Image 1 (spheres, helix red, strand yellow):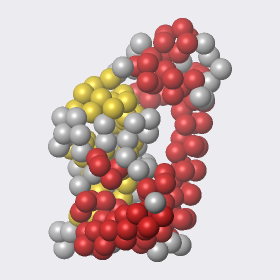
Image 2 (tube, one colour):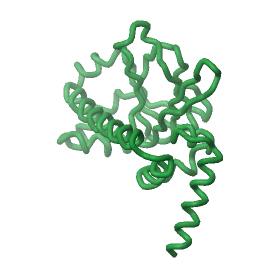
Image 3 (cartoon, rainbow, N blue to C red):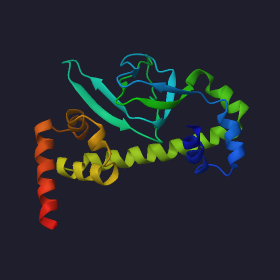
Image 4 (tube, one colour):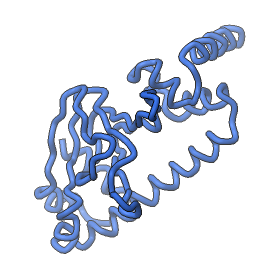
Length: 197
């Protein structure tokens, strides 16, 4: 299972495969069942994750009890809630497993020890985070300036697998629309594709 992680790490390091294997020996991997809540809204995050297999939803419940989906994380994506800048350190989001999954699990409290043991890991992690943050920033910019239909097409172009892995009402929430609007957009898109064929 750690082969997935090693292949991913190769993109951010010049280390050989044996050297990367040595680093990953101490990295804990855990499995989680579908429905597992990795983090509850309001709790202080103490773990970070890297998804080897699975899908995680980031969401929040507002004061009226409505759920809002903010992101989905899948294979080769890291899941970390950064909130050290807030006063109470409580997470504004919950993280939930939408599928059975296998993740690398990092302990935020012992992160420095891991970096001290493997200094190259800190540089790799920084590079990985730069890629993740850059992608999130691009996605957010395109989301804000686009129509619901454009958001759907952007999703289909960049993350088409989510359509079959995520419940429609959660996908609609992520796109900022109602489930019935998503149904209409999907029908129009399917009709358009048939017209092209």
